[in-house]
Image (tube, one colour):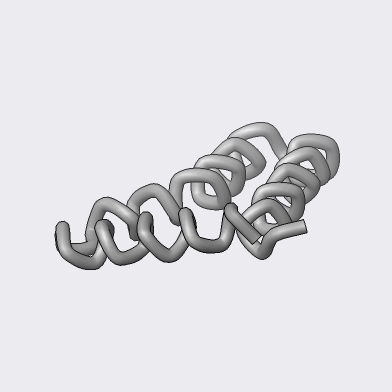
Length: 63
């Protein structure tokens, strides 16, 4: 399992647990932070950094 897919599985499990155990509004804020945080960080990267990141991911897919 790739490191990226491990992150997605962990975020999904944390989101489900938050929805089950926490009050409604707090749980939804936590879910948005868990899933939206990496997206926001990706868009904060410079275009050359995004290109480099895509190139590295493509190399890892062909393993």
